[in-house]
Image (cartoon, rainbow, N blue to C red; front, side):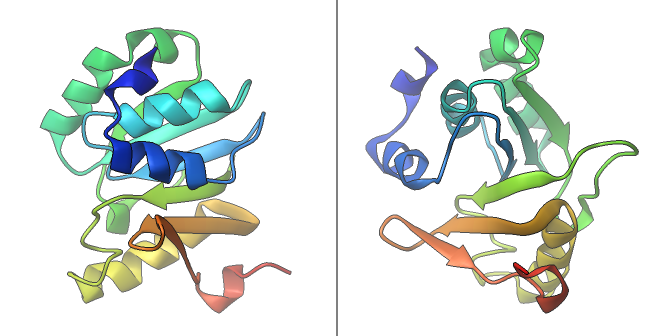
Amino acid sequence: MASADLSSRLAAIVDALPLRDGLRVLEIGCGPGAAARAVAERIGNGHVLAIDRSAKAIAQAREGSAGLIAAGKLSLRCVAAEDFVLEAGEAPFDIAFAVRVGALDGRHPAAGALALKRIAAALVPGGRLFIDGGSPLKELRLPAEHAPR
């Protein structure tokens, strides 16, 4: 089972996400893909799109995720959070999460402001964004025009 490659910290983060069958989940900054695989295993017929700005990370994630990719449960894209947009015809996501992403944890505020707008635009109305740094997660407020109605 792919979840076996999760650190205890990452396992706690995945466990804290409000996952359920059929969700579309966006992971920002997926690294080698361990959390994306664990989420994909927990959302039944849902789908995970895992993004990372590093081509090396995406290559590592692709290597470890062949079965989930082939099954249509996981896809990968090399793009920075502040540059992410839905592709033509791509359905929006229900939730998004990020672990150790500088644009979202305050280390890169200019990139963070743009990333929040891009992520909010890729979520369904009322979609939610979670990042590490809480116990173990915290929810970030999205720009007002994308807040829950």
